[in-house]
Length: 512
Image 1 (cartoon, rainbow, N blue to C red):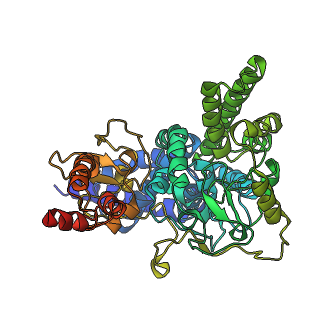
Image 2 (cartoon, helix red, strand yellow):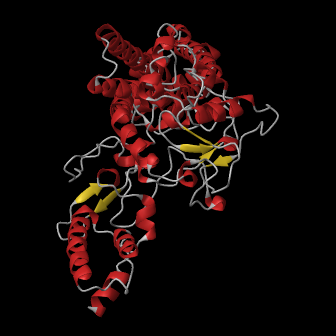
């Protein structure tokens, strides 16, 4: 009758003793998950027990399983350098995984990936940079925001650690997710850059220059060849990478983000890099750069072989292709000279532009050697300005939404514009029609801008604007007939209506 309790106590004592031995003896340290699983299968019949050594053994087993799962994820290239470092630390705190075979392999992978990332940083990132390594490699995801005219200040990095350079990779959980994101950013570049050019051409020097001021510059101004922003000559610091361009052709700080290394150098550095999100990012850039350069060279060969230098369709295709080439932060040394020689087919540099360019290039290096800490501050409260972060979120008014991080990759909402530009960015704004249909539109698809919205008390989108314009035409005709020009100048009336200030219009109607 007492045999069962005695047997139970004996089993319990044996299991507890086994657990204590496993946890205390050095021979069990670093044995790896497979060996621990085998040991646990022998004592699993007592898994229900709650005893100090059993509980600790169970906890160590769970930790080893978690580390092994991360290790398998790393072998598939789904991890970042930051994640590998974190798993390394977890290994050091694990009885069974510390100094295990998996730990050694993980450490080797982490070390090689860190060397690769350091090499990338040396090749791409300038000493005084406004962009992180990931921002340089990921592509132009700022175009929609710039088209909107939203304040998008650039702040210099205060820290240059690899962790800071790679921070924005934290938003991706898999290779597939990051690849989809890169494809979306790349797919919109040509389309949105064309729209941004038109927007910048209609903007003032104050609105596009990095100083955001109306100052007079005796050295004149110059235009960015890619985005068509205008800059005071004295606001520009010479970038050695500009030497790759023909005299007179300038790329601004938003369009020239890095040192622009040669494609072959980057490809060579990538060959020995371990599978990771960082390597996937670089591989994607290499692939799209190779395609862009090939497409551009094919167009140039077609133009040269047919002597079609005046064929507008071909020139338009060439212009679009050059947008992709110039947005890429790498140079193909074999085709670069042929490509830059084609710039003049799209834009001939004037004598004034050439003179301004030379003044910028020949300016002594000691003058303004260190760039401003923050630029493009038009309409921004500097006291509240922080550098953009991939982890930041922004809230807006009810009818003016921004795409937040939680729907960055899976935005299912449809823009109601007749021709949607399909902008893809975390900061894309939406606006709702107030004319009755309550449909939603992207700012960039209906010509709305951040500045226009905040300078007016309301906005009813393009539907209402068409109504206002038609009413304006009819009213001006009646107004001229009634000879009411003394009430208000027609130019002033038109400007007030087009800026959504209807008070002068109502005053004239009241007089009629």
